[in-house]
Length: 248
Length: 333
Image 1 (cartoon, helix red, strand yellow):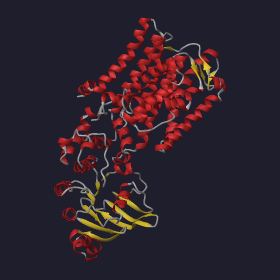
Image 2: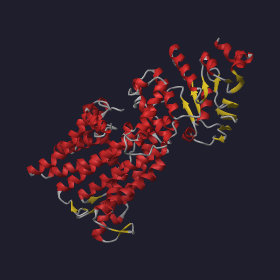
Image 3: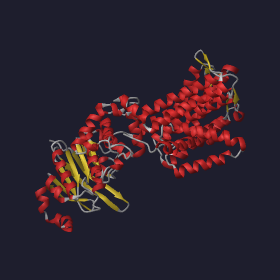
Image 4: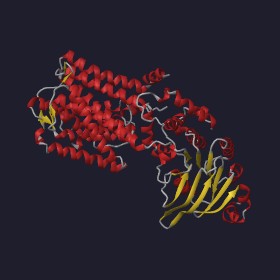
């Protein structure tokens, strides 16, 4: 079976800084691939290039067998690339429900309808409510984003991404800023989602990474220094020295 | 569910304010007619017309976050096209060498809106590649081009403008009387408000409001912000163009001042005074503007000093404009 996502020789420079230095990796269908590395390793830059917010200087991104490097962010989203942001990126004036409804409407490809009221449209509210239920926000549906807690916003980010029914979900530090209890709930949630969609997970929480991931890539100074199954990475001396050693 | 939604709006403070403002605007000329003060009828028409221009801009500025400082281009273009059709009907000749003039509003008004819409499409395609202060400046620049075009168009009087001796007729109806003409203006305003209120709660409105609040979010769910904004910009321009049409019909006069940047600023003042992004905001804004102009303007030519102070007060102490002051913060689902 072909790989879902293939990065080939990806490079991105910011001035003299090599944020992404010849990165090649692939994500297989039905797996959770974790991307770890110390702060400043270029993880978010890499996610940005895959999602389409950052243009690589060199290299290609192949998604579902198609070269998506020249495609824009919305075009890639329509091909099935969903993402969540490290810093929650939501629609502040809208309720949780309406945030998810926008994603449902985008998936239906019907944003040029001018008359019907969205709140009276069951084909929008139904699936949106279902997504909120899955992330545990069902009873907060009508609460505006500005009144949601940090943890709830992280959950809502995920609900919005799920509503797109992505083929591959890019998760940029979903546990960022969550307390231990919330982190555990998020990990459980990602466990259940693993069955439906492949994921590329950037995360600092090593407990979460090692319990969720099938494969791990380690990024240091923009380079992939190790790549392999969880058990292998966990015991690799090079990885311990470069990354895990610093934290432990 | 549909009905309960609209009923809940009518029961909200903003809903009550909306209905009350429109009722006052509708009642004022009727009272004026009964009292024989017909001057106030044309004043009410002007409030409705300027409010309509503001409702148009509010869609771009308030809903879509596109701070256009060039809506005078559409206001004036609409007015000039409608005026030119009447002008050619009176004086002979053809509009742009192509179309014979007509005093049939059912022909000339849609033509004016269509041409303004095409102009907005052209201006929008270029301007919407920029944002922030650049967007403000580029829309201003385009409007200035239209202003100088108006100045240098000898057929339509250039700097002096053109005088029209008769109003267009609407189908078989004459709207030369002050009261019938007011009803046309008020009807146009109501239609525009209805359109905007449906638009805002539609799928398109959700996308347009997201384009204002979080462009990246819109793109991340797979909706390209550019066509969403462009469509909103064109609809907004066409509503403002209709106001320009009505003003020219009311005054029987079209001049480059319709296209001047002061006009763009005025329309923006209606929106900011009334409340950015609030449905009835531009109506309140235009009403206060006309009231100040009439009442204070009766004492001194410097009435705009007072307008400036009112605007300053609103911007500093009531960010939500008059609607925010009277009905509280905007509610969203």
